[in-house]
Image (spheres, rainbow, N blue to C red):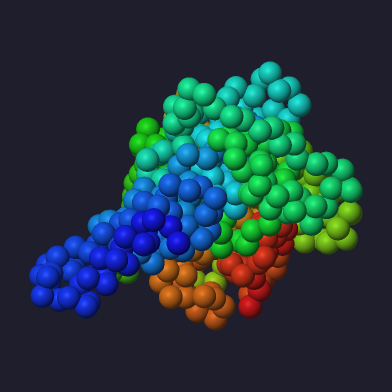
Length: 444
């Protein structure tokens, strides 16, 4: 028996068998001493891992909760390579790194993101610190008791580091990867202050976590004020134009308030490189509902049931399409399309890096009253995941047959009245494969 347990038991023995020697107040203090001593003892030994987490949850009230993030150790860390590729690939990679650190019961050292979009030229990736895009303190606050992010300044002067190389190739299976992680969470490797994952970008790591765990991490990612305010400007401009339009049409004279002008956001993937990619994907997967032509998107959006006679449509398109006026032509009467150039906000985007531009567009699409995207696009899929979370918090688990706030649609899949398919993320999926280039649009 450990010394601190022996002392506490002795104290309780005196209280229960000689009550006259101790007041009620002193008895309460003894109970407090018991809880505090056990908490301090368990917190002192990193080897307790998950057991420590469970004990702390049972012992400590909110007022006594130590900065343990419910078992996520603050003195053991995981380091990962620079996170690369597009915004949403980086968000997935970051979440996967967080969940890996959680499995190892370690704090994730704040990784570098990539401000530019390069796939091969490593020297052109332009690293950008996580806290230049997302709020560091806010992340730890929202993800408290789930995952934890740390700074390199949290490391001691003398740090032990273990380089753990991820396997690769067909022989490196999901099972072997999981076993490597389990072994790294105990024994000699776990004694090192830092485990440094070497090799592949975390986006390419094997996936061991359910969609709901990824969603939990994504919810903690809040843009820094500078970027959020840029998105505010774009959304305000869209709604301002919408109010003017509503005031000039019968739509605005139906007794509805003009204070909130709804808008539709469409993640329109019709650029050449995407069409080449999706055609190849259709051939490999033998699925025909991946690519959508501009005309098909226009027709299906125009057939959304209950859309109304007039609506502002924001087109989130690649910069290569901003000079293609044809994307603004051919829309159903009453649908008024804008992209960032016609909207007059392209200057807001141009002053920022690729990553920040994507973050602004993501926010504009996420806040839309109606969102329409491609279910094989990571950008569209993560937006729908976030919107699905909002709907679920309202107590709604399916949008089939009912009108819900923040509805989402997949234009690459035909739905009701030849419109786009209603889309909610399947939160029960066992991993994120459906989100990463998969058709996860739930049909009615």
